[in-house]
Amino acid sequence: MVTEGIRQIAVLGGGAWGTALANLAARAQPSVQVALWARNASHVEEMSATGVNARYLPGVPLLSNIRPTADLADTSNADVILAVVPAQTLRSTLEALAAHIKPGAPIIICAKGIEHSSGLFLSEVAASILPDHPPAVLSGPSFASDVASGLPTAVTLAALDGELAAELASLLSTPWFRLYSSTDLRGAEIGGAAKNVLAIANGVAAGRGLGASAGAALLARGFAELSRFGIALGAEPKTLMGLSGLGDLVLTCTSPMSRNFSLGVSLGRGMTLEEATQRSGLTEGVHTCGVLVDLANAKRVDMPIASAVDAVLAEQITIDEAIAALMTRPSKAEFGEIR
Ligand SMILES: NC(=O)c1ccc[n+]([C@@H]2O[C@H](COP(=O)([O-])OP(=O)(O)OC[C@H]3O[C@@H](n4cnc5c(N)ncnc54)[C@H](O)[C@@H]3O)[C@@H](O)[C@H]2O)c1
Ligand SMILES: O=P(O)(O)OC[C@H](O)CO
Image (cartoon, rainbow, N blue to C red; front, side, top):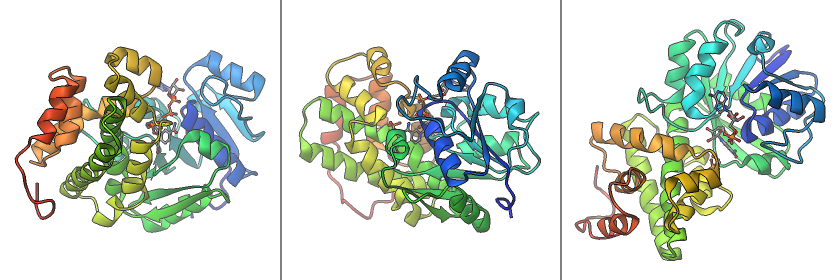
């Protein structure tokens, strides 16, 4: 059993989600030491001195069994690793971790995205660098500030080995954070990656004042294309209907707390991508959009909404042209189409 006798958990990534998950792990396992690794030494010093991550999760005290560190060697006793760095930096972080990681320690990927330089899903990135460490995925509708405030939240924890998935789920479980285990690793990571791109479209519609009907239509048709993509890439349909798929899509496409949705709102109101990014912070959908569309095209999966987001972000078409193009596609059956 992986979690029996566990002494240390390491969280890689000192952002909002890494910090919320470190606190969660520290609360779920009060006798376990939690190493919270962040790359910036002055940020770590600040967190150690104040007991708060004021840069990314202000107002939330770090629990006493959390130790912030900028040195990956401090994670070498960790029995479980949570990887919570931005998706495009997972590779470099795990490459640096390789010299320190405890043999066999599972890696729970908590970032959401697809690596744009390789087209690999994040569990594939992890497996390519650390093949002897089983990858798992934690994904689902969950804002760091909600989890840090103890608001009820439910997510999916997937690993190919069902027993490991269940163990990791119970390791991080608290009365307000409920994890459902799954063996559909690919399905769980596809939902989290695709929903960020689709949320940008919903944000654009909101920012442009297109109305609630348009928002609902985008959500439903966005789910249709997320499902087509997921099934073509090996996801189980029921996973796509679950927390990591539909659940996260609904949250991200409808909440102004989402950075991806907010970026879309800013774009819809006429800001440039640079201005919108500065305002929203980390927007994984921007970095995953192009590779998502490339993978869909390679599998001949039609993703008109994601493709429209990609074309708008690349400044190939304007927002108004994208809306017109989506609305004037040839009429077709709502269901039954394969692509
Ligand atoms: N914030 C949330 O509510 C939330 C919820 C679920 C999942 N996620 C996912 O978690 C991941 C991290 O998001 P976040 O909200 O914590 O981001 P954030 O913007 O709050 O923090 C990002 C962190 O990554 C660090 N970082 C940047 N480049 C790095 C690099 N090259 N190497 C190592 N660290 C680097 C930054 O210094 C910062 O500490 C994303 O993939 C996001 O989609 C976030
Ligand atoms: O703020 P976002 O758009 O990165 O979304 C955060 C989480 O992924 C929501 O589940």
